[in-house]
Structures are given as structure tokens and as C-alpha cells.
Image (cartoon, rainbow, N blue to C red; front, top):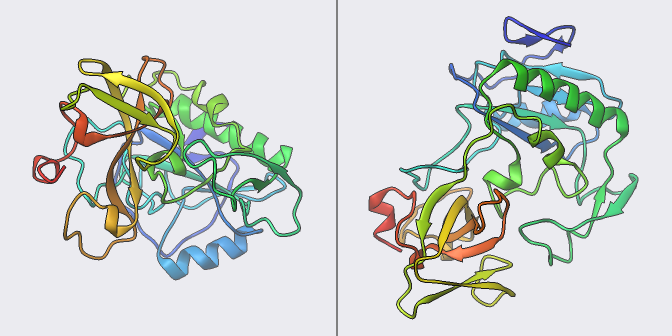
Length: 286
């Protein structure tokens, strides 16, 4: 395969109701559809005025809905390795490409499934078994992703769950995201750099986004952390005391890398960091 005029050669096209704006793709986001077929996915997307660039059937047949230089409404409220200015309404929609595979995730019903644990909420009892991705579907996704990475200045391949932590859980633990991300020619550097600055001199890295979850490591004042993505949660946990009505609420908890390995080490409360990528007006509420 190759890309000509911002379309993958040979793919059939599907028109969706949602129309985007011009963009330069710098992020590739992988999703699952929560449907069994592309036809069902299109119906659901049009009803909600949402969209992906690529839709892939379980047998590997792929469709493109728009040029890659037109944005699609796929990740919603989201953030990823932001340097500054993260607000309650932050989104990576503009500047990202969305690939959606037909898969029902942890709502798999009678489809072939296998056990698996999520990175960010491994203890949720309802999310311990997931629909398996057929080999043809995975191969098709990989081929298209390789073409995208060879054509555009994409700096990372992530899951929807990476950019909208605790808000969306696709593509789930049975899809090899790292295998795709490793193909990125020019990966984005580590996330926002900051240091621990806690009144008692310590900061605990937690397994989940709450102070009662399992402690993974204790950091000390001056230790360096890199913020990968700020997590979402219920309205009661929102940074802002009056956030209004939203689909997701930005919390004080962030996924961090603590050893420059560019991997998720756990969550920390940003209140105990020297600085954050939050918009100053929002950071004031930490």
C-alpha cells in the first residue's frame, strides 16, 4: 500500500456526517468500535456526529472516510504529552489520525475472547476479558499504520485509553500498541518535565487514580517525573470546582514516567509537583 493525495491507495471510501478541518497529523490514535461491523459503526458515528479516518472490518477490509489532512471527531476530550495550556476542553482531535477496528472490547458477548488487564485500571472486575482481534484485522491495521508513519510527521501511536485515561478503554490489552509505536520514525520526546515538590518531602506513585490505591513507589522532593497524560474521572474529582457539564472531567491525577523509559510508571497527584502543563487558570485550583 501507499498514500496518494492523502488517501490510502486501493481503499474504498465511506462518507460520514461529521466534517473536519485542515490539520497536520502528529498523532495516530487506535480505537475499537464496540460494534461487529463497519455498517453498524457508521450508523452509530453519524447519529453522534463523530468520525474516524479509517474503519476496518474483522476480515481486514478497510475503508477511509476522509483525507488524513482533515480532522475527525474521534478522541473527544483528551490530552497527550502536552507542554502547556491543558484546559478542561483540551482535545487531540485536531492533529491526529484515528483508526478504528471492529471489536467490542470487554462487551464482547459470544465472540472469541481472552483474559487481559488494562494498564490504567487493572483491577476493574468488569474488564478482565476482551474480544480477540483476528489476525487479518491486525495485519490490515498495521499495514495502514506503516503507510501513515511513512508519510506524515506522526510522533507517537497511542490508544484512545492513553489520551483519555479512565474515559475510554480502547483498544484494550489484547492489541499490541507498543509494536506499532516502535515503528514511529521520529518519536515524541518524554512528556512534560517537572519535579516533586511536596510539603512532607515525598510523593507516592499509585496504581490507580486515587490516594487509596496500591502504592508502587515513593518519590522524594527534587525527583524528576515526566507527565504523559492527565487522567479523567467523575465530576466530583474534577480540578475545577465548577466545571459545568462535560463528557469527561479532568482530574489532579497524571500518568507519569519516572525513569526516562517513556513508559507509564503509575499515577501521581499533580498538586505535589513543582509545575504542570495545565493552563495557569486551571492550575490555580490544584
